[in-house]
Image: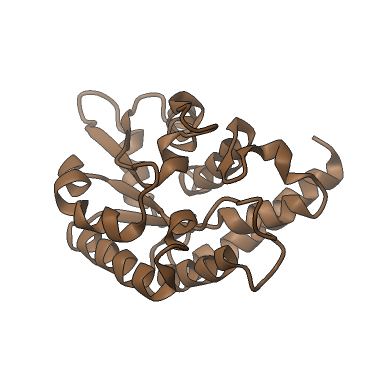
Amino acid sequence: MKAYHFFLLLTAFTFNWAYAQTGGNETTYLHSIKMELHKKWPNNRTINLVFHGHSVPTGYFETPHVNTLGSYPHITLKNVKKIFPYAVVNSITTSIGGEQSEQGSIRFGKEVLAHRPDVLFIDYALNDRGIGLERAKIAWEKMIQEAMANGTKIILMTPTPDLKEDILSASSELAKHSSQIRQLAQKYQIGLVDSYRLFQAIAKTEDLKDYMAQSNHINEKGHQVVANAILEFFSLESK
């Protein structure tokens, strides 16, 4: 990796940390989960990482092709297992291509909480442009509140890019949804992976097309960017 590009990525992670720390600080937010992940047989238990959202976490690259193992939920599983070799971990996707957060909130209890998530990731902003900020906020808060009542750790995801929008424009729809998601993370003191800021930093020096499978779906290189950001929640705190 070029030194300058690496510097930009570190800068993007710094932005991510700043927003995560106003919500769930990524160095400590998953402390109890990491303690469970460190346990060995026969004292360990299964840890469920549940990814709820739309087509991107589902693994859609070029629709209708689904690259499940190249998507960030399963890259995350591989990354987590490298850190915690004795852990029993499931990566579970409850996401549906084309779905927005109102639809996801309706099936949340029966299809998401039913998996008993230890850590829940919510990624809907890309599709929430169709319902707008107000309706999206209501749906996100409903899911957040239900998950918190269930004792689940929650990490909110800002959106990955859509090449039909200018990612560097503060007035774009995805920028507005990203801002709202950051505010929700702060309000509820929960985790945040700021994918949008990471791709904004990349876009300043690289062509985002290199990270995209189609205009609104990232490719495996793009999924790796998101998975690396998620890994900060599992790797920063000392054992």
